[in-house]
Image 1 (cartoon, helix red, strand yellow):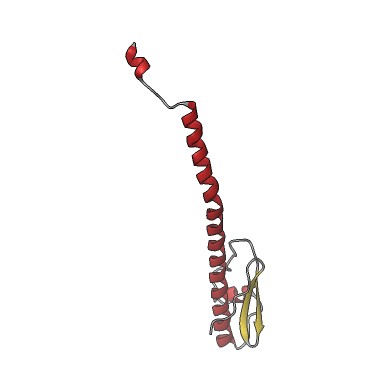
Image 2 (cartoon, helix red, strand yellow):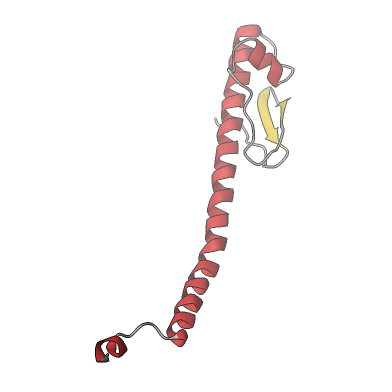
Length: 114
């Protein structure tokens, strides 16, 4: 009978304190994880913009005119698929000072690298 009473478990206070500590750690880490996810989306969108811009320039070199839109790049096989912004933005193409400009409705335009 003494052996049953000698077994000890966690007290309610110890469980409450450990749950509090875990919840504080989670509350601190969630904003950091959110910012990492947003940065990954922005980086992926920038990569898409660079790809589209380079294919616009390839199109111009081969066709001697700028593409009218993403569908032109896809129909002439400069793009296998039309890139999609991970945040749901839409890409628009334009030409400024004879340079290809790609902009996204959710992320800033990326100027051509020189």
